[in-house]
Structures are given as C-alpha cells and as structure tokens.
Length: 448
Image 1 (cartoon, one colour):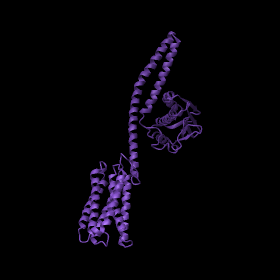
Image 2 (cartoon, one colour):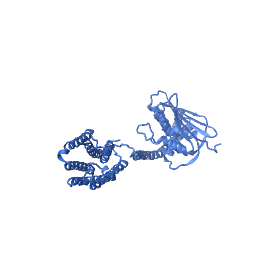
Image 3 (cartoon, rainbow, N blue to C red):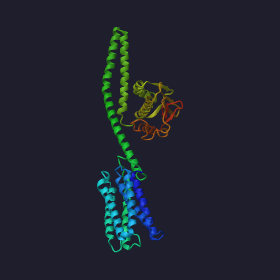
C-alpha cells in the first residue's frame, strides 16, 4: 500500500472509533468523562487530518514526520479543549471544534483543487471528491453557525432533531467522499510512481500489458524496417553476384579451351562456387523477409535446416561455436516454411546468445533430426549454462525473457507457430550442462 492508502485507512479507523464512542455514550453504556470526550474529539479531528494527508500524498512524496506532528497537534488541541471545557462552556467548545473541522475541510479542498497536478486532477473521481469536500466546507460553516443557536449542534448530551439532521448530512457526504476515493484508486495509477493495491491491480496489469504491447509494436516496426531493407539489399546483391558467377564461368571456359594455367582455373572454380553459395544465401534471406502470407506445403526438413544454417553460420564462426549435425532421417512435414524457419532461427539464436554469455571454452551446438512413422523430432542442444530453474516452467509464456532489453516474444511466438502446425516445442536442461529445445510435429501423411 502507498502512503495515500495508509492515511485513508487511518482516517477510516479514527472515524469508526468516533462513531463507536458516540453510540456508546448516547446509550449511556459509558460515561461522558473528560477522557472519553477528549478521545472522541481527537479521533474525529484525526480522521480529517488523515484524509488531508491522503490526498496530499497522492502525487507528492511527504516526510512522515509532518503527519505525525499533525496528529500530535490534534491530540494536544483535544486535550486542551477538555481541560478548558468547564471554564469556557459548551457553546465555545462546540464553536472551537466546528472551526477546526471547517479549517481541515478547507485545507483538504484547497489541496484537491489547487495542489494536485495534471493529469490526476482531471480524473473524474478527483473532481467528485473535490465537490464533496466543498460540501464539507459548507457543512463546516453550518456547524459554526449552529454553535450560536440556543441549543448547540452536537451529537452528545441528548442531541436535538436539528443536530441529527445536520450530522446525517455529514455522514452521507462522508460516505460519498469515501466512495469517490475508492473510485479514484480503482481508476488511477501514477505513471511516475506506479503502486499496486487490491483495488487497482487489474488496471495496473492492463497498463503494464499496454506498455509491453507498445514496446513490442515499436520493436516489430523496427524489424519491419530491417526486413524491408534486407529484402531490398538482397534484390540488389543478387544481380552483381549472378554477374560475378557468369563472368567467372566464362573466363574459366576460355582458359580451359586455351589450356592455360590450371591454378587460375581452380581459383575461378572457387569464385564461381562461393558466389553461387552467396547467391543462394541472399535468396534464402529474401524469401524469409519477403513472405507476407501463410503458405502450407510439403517441406523437406533437411534442406530447410541447411538453408537456416547457411544464414547463422557467420554468427557461429564469429563466436567460435562449433556446430554438429546429426541427421538420421530426411522427413517431410506439411507446413509454412517461413514460419518454421522463424522457429529454428529463434532457437538457434538463443543457443548462440547463451553460449556467447557463458565462459565455456569449447562451445558446441548440436542439431539432430529424427523421425518415425508419425512424428518428426528436431533437437537443438548447447553446452552453455542452461535455463534458470525458476524460468523453465514459464519460458514459453508471453513477455518472459532473460535477455537484457529482450521483449519475451520470441519463444512465445515459436510455441504459437508450432501449435498452429499441430506440433509442440519444449525445453529442458541437460544434467551435464546446457539446454535442449525439442521441436516435434507430425510427419506429412503423403511423404512416402
């Protein structure tokens, strides 16, 4: 609970105590002794002090010593009134109390009207609370005027009908003021100091979801920009790569016809081979980034995985990670190749990041492909530090991430893609160290 809620709870407790004391004294269960009178005066004044500090601390961090001093001052005033009650008389006592109430009402109204900054001040429940506080100020003036009546307006000492009516209005306005505060706490979360309580927990959760969604949209927009750039670059690179391969092949044929330097011919063969590989890589990237619709078709997994490995090989080489392939079968599945490639790239990148952040000297990633009559299994294993045990049960949940600056969307998206392909993805740690991501999906029924 934040300070505002604590002060309001103190106010509720004090007001409840005042009501209990008034009932018990009016039914003559306890006597109107100076101590009881002073205690009820203190709790009623402290209730208004609590509300005043509750509203003031909504958007201001206050030193608690000021509220403590205010409560002590109210106790001192209540004690002084009881000490002087016999000397000054009932009318003066009621007038002093009415003046104190009105002062506290006016201060709280001033805080609500002028001290609460935007956008909190524009909250409809703050406005309603301010209106009821203004009503409390008017009520305070009525109490001041009532002190000059022949029979003072007080709920003690056999109150008259006028006193009952006036205090009934006070109770009604106090109840609506309380409901306005509850409405405020349900509908308001300070963006600079977000605090959660049982009332605004759903709202705070929605705001957090909104903020994460906004961050995700920003990141997605950035990815879209990168994909557009990558698609454009791949288109521009494919033409010169094709030209290089053609020129190398043409030159090679001329040298072969003339029986020239075999070493030069071998170099041209290597140029042609490497440019062809690079052109295939660019083509894979282009397909990956340019796909806009879901297209299900039979997919040879070995070929698809090899295409992905061509894309991630530079990252593996730069981080000195050894890749081991274990393809026991060459199964065919039915699905969208781009989406399945996204899953594999995401898992492989996670493995690369895990190895890059650990101190393992011999960094290894192994990828296995197995199949039976019904099920295809792809296992991607690394020898890093593994997945933290507290994260493991929820690793595929939305917004769960261990990466600094990560969004927690990648693995959730992987799981969603696999479920749409009637498959599954799971993760678990290896006792010897590292983690395994297991991808399973059905074999294409017409693959044989």
